[in-house]
Image (tube, rainbow, N blue to C red; front, side, top):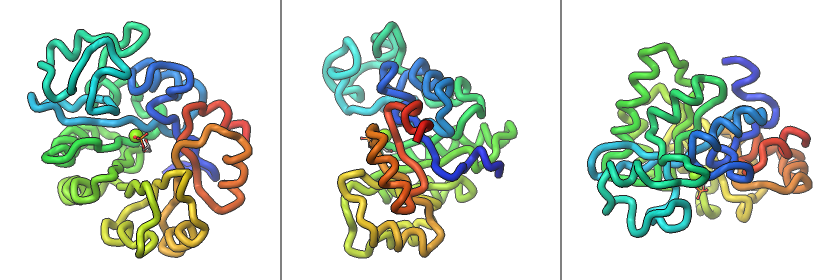
Length: 236
Ligand code: G3P
Ligand code: MG
């Protein structure tokens, strides 16, 4: 693992770099990388037709010119939608081919029911093609689905996503043998950070766009941030 994979303070472009380009598009991923993000984060959903799509919401309304639920829309029609600035909703494979190992890829599993296994099958092809497992980090709020992913691809690092402070602090990360705990900026508790780090886990915080907050988190021992503005974080 090179120092570039995990520098002192990791800058992770959130949904690519959603402060600069339409979120979760190839343009946003490329923008994040060009701005210097060490890693890019993007959300992945398993469509009923079997495709893995890079998309955040369950509904198409906010980020495309479509309407209704993504899962109710036929795949061909989905791919004809405008996801912003003429961008298409990408597939997982298109996102990875665009990233081309220029940055680490943090894949967030948004859906359950087979998403973990499907993502593992795709990533296996990239491992077979020579991508190091450490260039991937697979995360989810849905910890049972993350567990399914971990069973299918134990060599690929995983991160638990937390939107609050659990009773057992970072205990779920131990159960999942997770490399990292990714926690909301609203719930950064020094005891949670200390517990994670005492067990050798990294701590990344989402979503942080204010440089003063980035500096405070760094002082607390946090290992990096998800940000819509990687350029700001790189200046911290
Ligand atoms: O993975 C960090 C962050 O992306 C989690 O929240 O809602 O932006 O996917 P969300
Ligand atoms: Mg996400």
